Length: 215
Image (tube, rainbow, N blue to C red; front, side):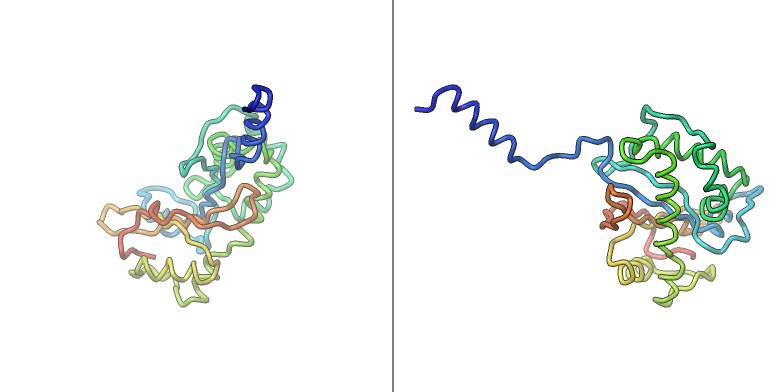
């Protein structure tokens, strides 16, 4: 019969062999890109991004258990930490509505990015986002597959298939309904592992688009 000390030792060995769960505040990311013509089509007033015809960043959102984690404790946004990235951010991460880019970056960091601060400080978070935008060129990928943004109706299945064919990973498509009843594709999400680099499959059930939408 095992002694108490032996039992304790065996329990320690067993626990040590169990898969280690991620103890950090997040598991992975949603990298959310928005389509400016449709974002602006939903605005009744000013929208400085109306003439932008390339996907821009909405945000890099840490996820835990399949949901976004937000408003975590941490270091508040400090533009001085990322001022060297301003020119790049103005292009890939503009505030499409008001043009107040710095406010938008601060909002995204204080709401979302701060929850990944255990691995990505502000410099790393924004640089990672820039890198992802350059590496995940949705417009080019869609055009290669024959999906051209022309303001006409597209099938959800066709757009999803085009992205999967190019990136070999499942995206999330996000739509909103305009005042005239049209369903507009406003965002495409690609999912990224916690290293901020590796594409992983998204949960396709998170897509909220109808079977057809305007793009």
